[in-house]
Amino acid sequence: MLDDRKTRMPFIKRFLALWCSGVMIVTGCGDRQIFDETGLATAVGYDLLKDGNIRGTAIMPSINPEAKQKIQIFSATGETSKSIRDRVNLQSDKRVLGGQIRVALYSENLARRGLGSIVDTLYRDSSISSRVYLCLFEGETYDMLTYPYSEEGNIGIYLYRMIEQNIEGEKIPSSTMHEFFRAYYDKGIDPIMPYIARKGNELEIKGIVM
Image 1: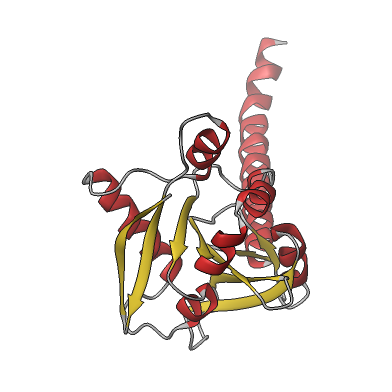
Image 2: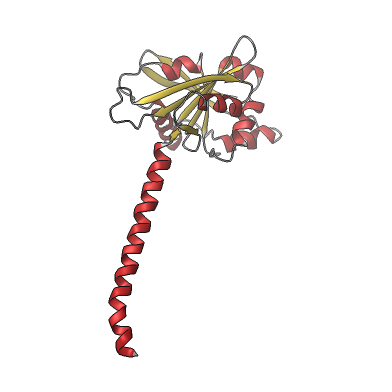
């Protein structure tokens, strides 16, 4: 009995090793397939249109190595950020996900109308991190996100890094979505955002708005 077990052990070990490697290959292929079928937005911008609707613009990196452009730009209109994303999906060959959004920008006109409801829709989306940075932009966010920057590449990542390093350097306070709503609902505290402007190829933080 002991001898029979010894002869079977090498076979069992080899079988387990092959089975485990097969699982890893299948899982890896599955992950790659999911990655190939989804688009991960890194930045979104919202503008108020004359008819009262909101235009949303999303920036996603292009994963096609043969593509001339490093990023893909999608824009749609709607009443909420969710309805805008649903319409963006109708334009894309990949399912657009918000899990990698780093920065959400809002135009001055939209901010004057009030940001509570549209930010709330974004906040309630479980796929989006509450650590997304919220910013106010001087002008239309569509113009800013679609501008052909010469060096920045993925403007969503560039904005995130610019805001992050200024927070770490204590030049500006942090302005995540979580912090926005904590201040929004607390008495005696106003939500704050960095105020961003563009001059040619350059983006800069001009100050803080409440």
